[in-house]
Image (cartoon, rainbow, N blue to C red; front, side, top):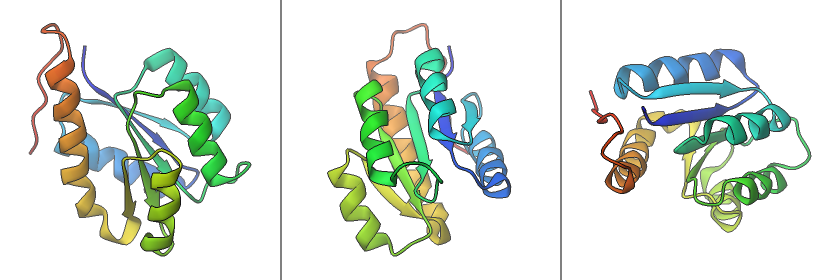
Amino acid sequence: MPATILIIGDHDPMRRALRAWLEMTFPGCRVIESTNGKEATAMIKASSPQVILIDTGLPMRNNWEDLTHLKAIAPATPVVVLTSYEAEVDSTHAIASGARACVSLDRIPELLPALATLLFAWLKEADDGYERITVR
C-alpha cells in the first residue's frame, strides 16, 4: 500500500500544481485532493493519509479551528500548513494548533525536506508490506 498525501485547498491551480509536483517528486505515493474541510474529514476517515497538507486560505470556520479539528480526527497524522501570509505569524498559530511545519507558498521548495522527513519517518514505522518511497 503506497503512502498517501492529502492536499486540502480551495485554489484549483495551486492544488493541481502541488499534486503534480508531489507525484513527480515522490513517485509511488498516492496524492489525493480535497477542496474543503467537510470533504477532507470524509477523505481522512476513508483513506488514512500519512501526511496532510492544508492551505490556510480555506473558506471554512477558522483556519486554526479547522486544523485542530483535523488533528482531533487523525491525531497521529502529521499536518503541514501551507500559507500565502506572513510565515512567522502563521507558523506560530500552525504549530500551536498541532501542525508539524508551516511552509510559505512562495517558498514551496522548502516543502520537500519537510515531506521527505515525515514520509520516511512513517515508512520506518510501517509494516513491511508497504511500498518503498523514493525521492526524485
